[in-house]
Image 1: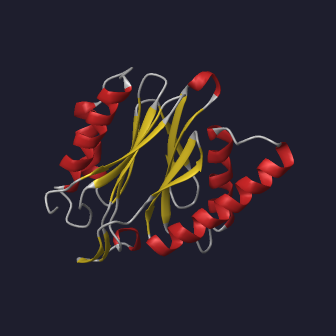
Image 2: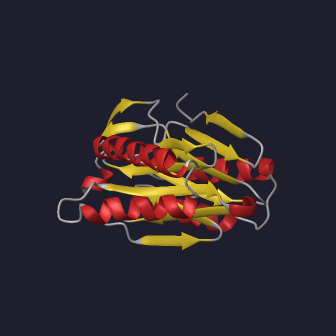
Image 3: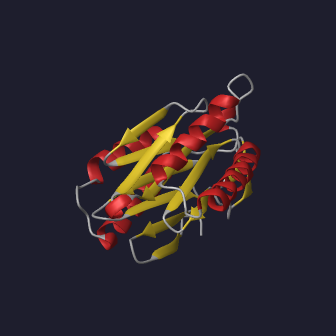
Length: 204
């Protein structure tokens, strides 16, 4: 079993019309044994930028603490929040810095940039970015997430339709992966508000 699948995970970010949603499952496991059913993989950097970290849970928490530290330094120096594109470059640089002993994480970054245009990207553990205009996925359920998102994604979705589509894609995908599941967390971000919703899984 790959170290990236040791704890199991499912992460997806999808864009809509001037909005985005990012969702993850809630299961924390040690291989096939479930340890917790309320684990968080999505972290807030500021109101318009969120990061999801799949992979090894301990590395994800360590990396998140480093990112919060670097963002606070940026706020002190620049007196503004980071744009999502800038934040993605920061994450990429931090990961590449540790390339000989990497963090075993595969980040998914989602944010609203200038003119409230959504930005999403993912990267591997060495910081190689993959940009997308529709959706990005990560985690042990990524193969089934690709299929579900390909069939459900539509351009320029309104926030409620986006929430419904990303939720259905996540729940359908984790049913096909024994290392992730137990419902999900969804963040729906528009220029004026952030909604956090919890999805119930089949076991709840």
